[in-house]
Image 1: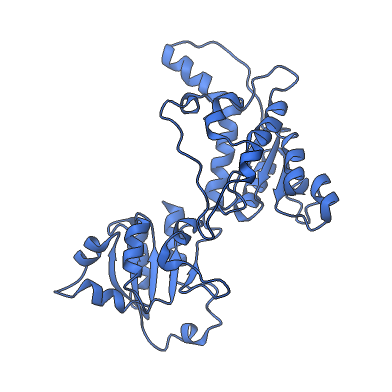
Image 2: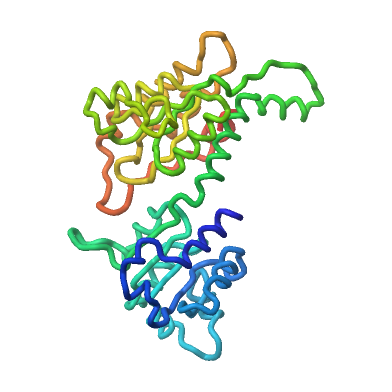
Length: 338
């Protein structure tokens, strides 16, 4: 898609490395390995951008077999990987395959991810960071590249429920055309949990719809009172910005919609438990008897943790803990709000 292509194009210009003379002057060529589907559009764009530059593409593929197949002549794939200075991860490569390749790539200095999230990379043993030491190789990501497409998806999802699209689809399937009332987004309140690039882009678009925007971040910087009561957003995108656990609950009680865009880290694993969904559930059962925008807490019970179990969840130093897989017949799969 467009966003993926933008991320691939951004990889051709190393962000944050321009101050390093050995990179910025390009006094020598640099060998690149691209991890991705060879015929993918983002890989093709990246190859075009790197053509006739100081970056020389050694191999392209999602695993050893595909990488080897992209080599010219009878070159040995292990010898080729040993020459790599840079690796670009475009997608489709499993952590196991990437870890196998990284074990050989001893000269690797820079690893760029064409996705915004890097938690799938941080779990790879050959990228594990030694305490107190800088990460080797340097790891960069496509931060902000997807903010507009994701913001549009959030507003689409809000409108999906405000227009009761589930009911419309059901009537269409049955050949029934009964009139029913829908809701405007204008005047509704959306809470954005995680006020980074994606969160701010979502808040900006929501304001264009006339929605009331509240936001939450780890800490407002204004102490406990500021976290609980919210502080003014200096950029004017959100009406109030809350912080901390108590601030999150206070914000949720005011929201009809919630957009959760935090990175997956040890702090955000199990961030939403039954306590948070109950805070939201009270608000969406709204006073006028209109249809709630969430399916309620009961269908989600198998996916949620209690506040007490959340506090005792064990996590490793580098890999966020994952919740247990839901049973195949979980009620959430068929819920209207899923």
